Amino acid sequence: MNEHAGPSSATPRPVTAEVRARAESCFRQAQADVAAQRLEQAAAGYREAAQVGHPGAQLELARMRLYGIDAAADPDEAVQWLQRAQAAGHPAAGYLLAMVALGDPSLSDAGSGDTPAGGGGGDPDIAARVITQINQWMLTAMRHELAPALRAAAILFGRSADSDDQTRCLQLLERAAGRGDVVAAQLLAERLARGEGCPRQPQAAEDLWTQLARAGVPRLPAIEGVPVASPPADDASPGRATAAGVLDFAEALRLPASATLSATPAVRQFDGLLSADECRLLAASAQPLLHPSMTVDPVTGAAVANPLRTSQDAGFDPLHEDFALRLVQLRMARAAGLPLRNAEQLIVLRYAPGQEYRPHRDYLPPSTLAADHPEAGNRLRTICVYLNPVQAGGETEFPDTALKVAPQPGRAVVFDNLDGDGQPQPASLHAGCPVRAGEKWLATLWIRQRRYRTF
Ligand SMILES: O=C(O)CCC(=O)C(=O)O
Ligand SMILES: [Fe+2]
Image (cartoon, rainbow, N blue to C red; front, side, top):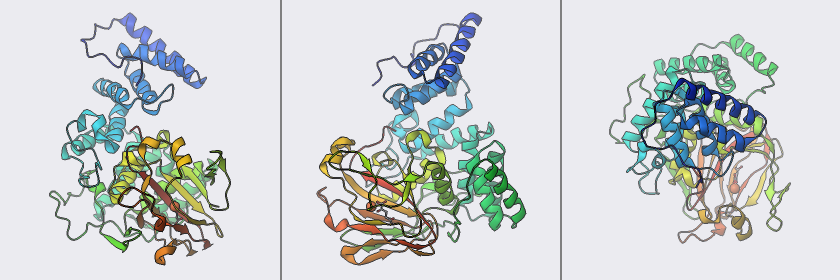
């Protein structure tokens, strides 16, 4: 917990012009302090301005408290500041509240008294009231042309088979790209090149790629052949059929049917868990963060190169997350039947030809566990989603059951690393087979037994 007081609920004193001017100058000084990495000073400046009702300062202070930039994170305090900034009309505050509520509604008023999203293995239903609130926050953010909100909505409309929703997806990607959103521009170029939701426009796609290349943005892997998500036939959830044109985030949390591939180890497969846009979103967001994979030395705790795992990888710390990424992760956590707050940070792996992840188990040895949130328990379950079609090789193999899962974009494989008593399950041994041709992109969530994330 933070030793500073959060926003006071007492009736605020009237703000004079002098107080307002002082708040503005504190806010500007705090911005300069952030730029100069004087983070504690910045937080103090934002706090002073926030306390007299400066919405920009309230938002910045909330972000610092959310991500623990100046001191340990305190999401409860962050949410209180976001609520004040939102009441004062800051368009980004609702967006951030929506993002927090999506992973853990218990942190915001929207979720008080409700089952948290993804809560427990048994009842992972996010309350309708939370969804309604999230929808309202996001619609407000979109009306203010907030690019991450536009992009998230575009990806959501893109999941619908309705042709008007497909058009909405493209229009929203264009709007986000027009606001300088690089990932939206990448997604748009891929759709234009393939004529997804629009006639094929190879020249427009090429122009966009040229502009992106000038800005140092590399091309995405070719991601295609993902079926448009359709609900399982036996889905009897009320309100299932969302009308075209209605932005319904609940819709984005529905799971396709799954198939059990093995009982011991428990392995399940979902086809079409992620859409092509979502696979591209993960690859595009990971691309600038990729570095050679390391493994943790169980003796020294140091990150070391290891022939066990020769891929590149990118981890998304909370600062790198946005609404669309969290929505994807929430669906992944639901497919695994566990709350998102139990998940370690999302990892995206990229294997070049010849690269592999040799046979291993995902549960952590006691020494590694002791150094990384031991209170969260061990890695109960893993979910991996293939993001692109691999030309040859790259299957996920479970040698103990002679099972091989072939990569296919949007396909997820979920498996247990611990047995029913929470003990390491040696039969969970698995490997990422060497890629023989093309590349393999994969997103992984390692999900612990108990809460791992602060929000
Ligand atoms: O690349 C694969 O198929 C397996 C990846 C994996 O084992 C992991 O991410 O833990
Ligand atoms: Fe693994």
